[in-house]
Length: 528
Image 1 (cartoon, rainbow, N blue to C red):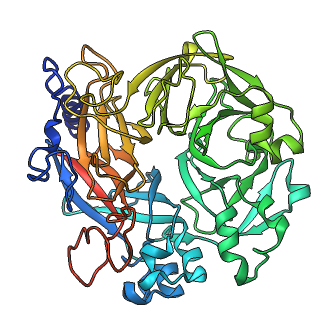
Image 2 (cartoon, helix red, strand yellow; image 1 turned 180 degrees about the horizontal axis):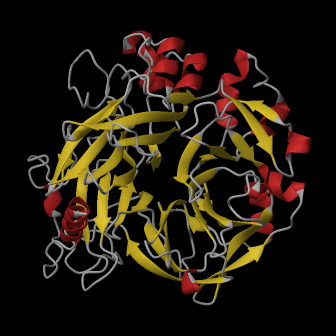
Image 3 (tube, rainbow, N blue to C red; image 1 turned 90 degrees about the horizontal axis):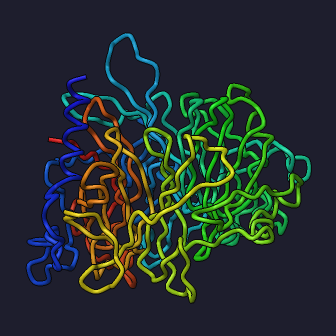
């Protein structure tokens, strides 16, 4: 309890930092970051006040004891299958049942969305078979030793899911699509569930199917695409569990996913469409979460602009709707948001936050989309904490951008930071909102990183930074362990600026060694 209290007070004090101060035109968190240009990101990372940083896992680290050594200039299938992959986004952090030895343990699940040839292979020469294994999902065992979290090589739950993984399909569309499929492709995000499993959101599998089409296994079949783009359910604690693609939740390229439940115990899912003008959807299961088939039937709805927020409009319950969810949502008048992505629920279940990365092509702003390419964050109120309510009032919680350059930015009083392109969201044990940004490697204006926004009290909306990533890197989400005062984050594709390559990355962080490429890294930010 004392550790938890320290974590909560530490994070709260960071979020509230300088509550009476005015935001500086030149953000203080860049000072000293690159003395020649205080607003430009540097080759290394920067840790926020009050935190220390630990490296937990990097691209190429062994997952299994018989894995070959990491030879980045000559990757092999064996390396891709048995080493931590090139890219990572935090999907879930699960605490398994306590063991008799009383050693604290966690299971970390990451989505691995990308494996770009120009950053993986010398000369940019693609090797699709290896790339297909680098993408997917990674499950890693962690245990607490000597005051820090470490990976367990060969851990009981440790495994990779990739283009070679056998999956089941269930629900209304399975009879037409098929009952089995090889591979999970383009997984963008994930969510732990109240019933103990993990849900993983496949994105647009089209580019991957084209890339893998010469490998066989049916990837070149024009009808194969119907077997991807679903929500995949995984029991991360059971290494023998066969992943299940739940067709009742619809087929669409997703950017964000959040699982919760109704007051009577039914699963409720919120998810965003991965598009510059994307929609927000909800799935409410028909039966209780303890029913193993609860995700195989329910009601899909799309968010429509209404009154002071959004109304949920139910969609037809038929296979054409499930298979073509984007068209069904548009036909129902679904509101299009500016690149909607990550989702997070407040601790009390009364507010749903949604990150929008921005859409510079929007011509007409509305109450939920202020326009511009910098992005914003929306706060939806769940009346009475009811995730199934028909109407959600909405407000703008943050409008991103450099306040010295863009009019209309919105940050709370006392903010000590500003940001661009919010992508991932998570709520910490103290109730503060953590925001991960992703400028797609174009980090000349500002560094991507993890930012903390206070969500209550006199400094509501105040923004501070917890971590700034190296040049070219994005923040791939965050998850929390209150007992160890640790926030787990993913530093994605450092050095991958526009025009960078395996041979000529912008930085070689974290090793900074000339014979090592930059490495996606799972870090732990420990409250001091």
